[in-house]
Amino acid sequence: MNISDKIAILRKEKGLSQEALAEKLGVSRQSVSKWESGAALPDTDKIIAMSELFGVSTDYILKADEYETPAEDVSESAEEITPPSDGKKKKPVKKIIALVLALCIIITAIAIPVHYGGIREAWWELNGGKVKYPYVLVHGLGGWGEGEGINETIQYWGAGACDLKTELTDMGYEVYMPSIGPISSAWDRACELYAQLTGTTVDYGEVHSKEHNHERYGRTYDTPLFENWGEKINGGQRVKINLVGHSFGGATVRLLASLLEYGNEAEVAATGDETSPLFTGGKGDWVHSVTALCAPHNGSSLTEVLNSVGGLVGIKDTTDMLISLCFGIADIGSSASGVYDFKLDHFGVSEVTESNAESAVSAVTSMGNDHAAYDLSPDGAAKLNEMIQTVDDVYYFSYSYSTTKAGSLLRGQVPNSTTLPVLYPFALAMGSYKGTTDGGIAIDETWQENDGLVSVISARYPFDEAYVEYTENLEDVEEFQKGIWHVAKTKDGDHGNVIGLNSKTDSTLDFYVEHFGMVDNLKR
Image (cartoon, rainbow, N blue to C red; front, side, top):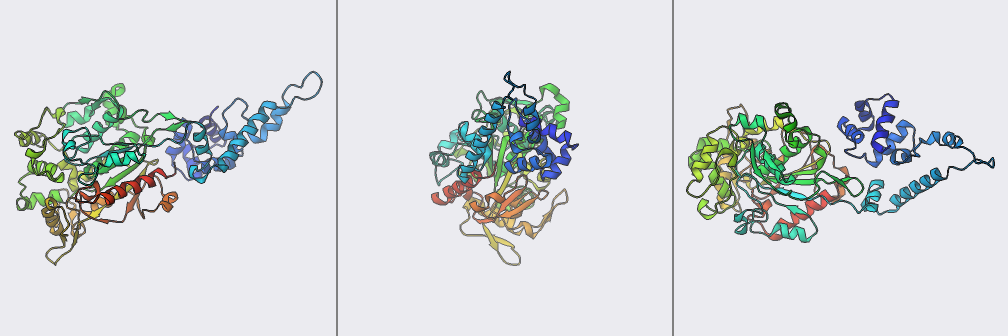
């Protein structure tokens, strides 16, 4: 009998529901459910709390062999052992050995440096060491990953500052930079990311695909981005990932984590056994952390600005906006200087070139709202947020940047002189815009401070989710909570600084090293 079985049996013997036990232990019901299903292990303090609640030893809960017996029953069990022929009672040798071994493990755990943290960590060390979780960096609108040809000209992650992956890999971090649809919707991008991570065919879902008039299946990835994601290795440790999303990549990683945990009932109802595992839920513990960098959690007022004053910044419509931002964000000027894979196969667009870029993007935007421009709007982001939920077992972090300062009465915010030139007109327009969206969302002066593409108020945290302010200090790691946003103080800089655009090598690299170091030290 293993620990999951014991928790379930002890809970039922105590007459407690999962919800009641969760309340007594200060955790969610989902956490108790995962302990009992074997999908997760309780922390050491919860094991101690359960031993006190159930009246058994921690040794009884932790051990998994045929001699397990609650502490108060040990003497009774020993008396039941058949005495030897010489009339003397046989000592429960195997029980004593098991108890001694368990005691040794506990003593060893206490003696191990604090860095390893306790009994679970000691067990992991005995089984091959603590698993290092990979970092998956997800680009935003108009971006690309390491597999794209354009990455040889200019890298998205690191940009002009450094070769970010090489630098981080040399420091011992496992880093991946997948490439997903640069103008696709958050839903389609999450599906593509999942397929790359698992080495499968992209399944956009039957319900979603019919609603948005495109093919259900996309490209096939023959091998996973890395091995063993979601599996248990080295003493039962789950292989998790740390998701990092820049700009629209923030919405992508948030949605992926949410779908992994909660699934999608409509897709399950429509396709039954043929449903993609992404939509069946129960895999939230495959993710360790979600980090959003300059992410439009609540949309960008830029979409409203362009609808009203787009001509002032050279934008005529949604299609033009997407094409301009795709190449503008990368600071590569125009499609002529960098054509890349738009990944629009499911819309029947096999290739986008300099000559057909406008018609190809227009073919997608004219078919409805299944594209980035809609999800980036405040109204689209609000609908997206209705679909996304934080996961109890995941740590959440959010970073915002500001490239504007207070201006005159007529101009609430004006861009700093250090703003990336291609972002300057956007920052200027957003800094003075006020209005109301078609869905009734008021874009007032609180939206004016921005990073050139995203308002600071939107980049800090989703309006409908819990959050706390935090300082980027390793000493605070023990205080971090799962399931809520940890919002860092807004940094000086524009939308591209955090990925290395318009930034120095040291400051770019230092940010990731400090953040990754903090995430690696979070309580598991």
